[in-house]
Amino acid sequence: DAKTTQPNSMESNEEEPVHLPCNHSTISGTDYIHWYRQLPSQGPEYVIHGLTSNVNNRMASLAIAEDRKSSTLILHRATLRDAAVYYCILREVQGAQKLVFGQGTRLTINP
Amino acid sequence: DVKVTQSSRYLVKRTGEKVFLECVQDMDHENMFWYRQDPGLGLRLIYFSYDVKMKEKGDIPEGYSVSREKKERFSLILESASTNQTSMYLCASSPRVRNYNEQFFGPGTRLTVL
Image 1 (tube, one colour):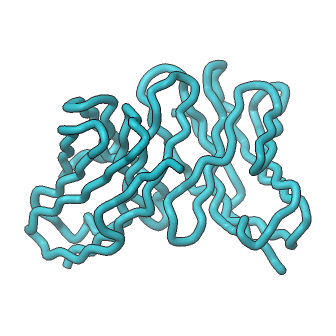
Image 2 (cartoon, rainbow over the protein chains, first blue to last red):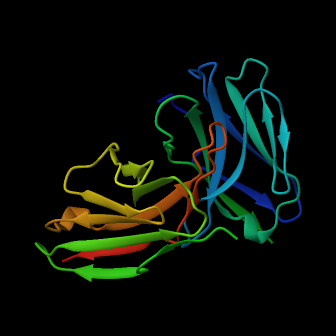
């Protein structure tokens, strides 16, 4: 499984945008980039995924570098409820449909 | 809403006991997964199943077994619980459709083995 690197922690203020970076320099051409988050005392929840193009959904945006060796999850206007651990995961199209979670980034939102 | 439910939020067992963790999903998903989560180690896959009566070992299957007799239910079994199996156990499910593999997680079971 290709590896991802994320900062251990980040901090932001409520109602400001948050940019969570992820490096994945060994990504292969068929790997999808997935983001999940885990709120305190809950199981992880899906946030967004993409392959090459930038993606938007109701929760966030995903910006993927042209060489695909890095990506950024963007929360446009953080709320206190966005405080969580955010995981960047590479998922192969072929093979087992498992997710390999790294350590993630612990995001703190200040009121 | 997709629902993945786990039989217990908290469980305390003694060393050597047989432990059953149950997971049920209501979205007719083909794939089901069992992970454990430990501080500093993240989530690690124990077993997964892509169909009834089918199972595949994940990254850390030792000391565990699973059962999938019905599509909606996936059980994790600790044949003889040990203290190093104290952990948070998370179940997940996903549809089999390729390229769309959002996994839906349950709330987790925090197991303590004394």
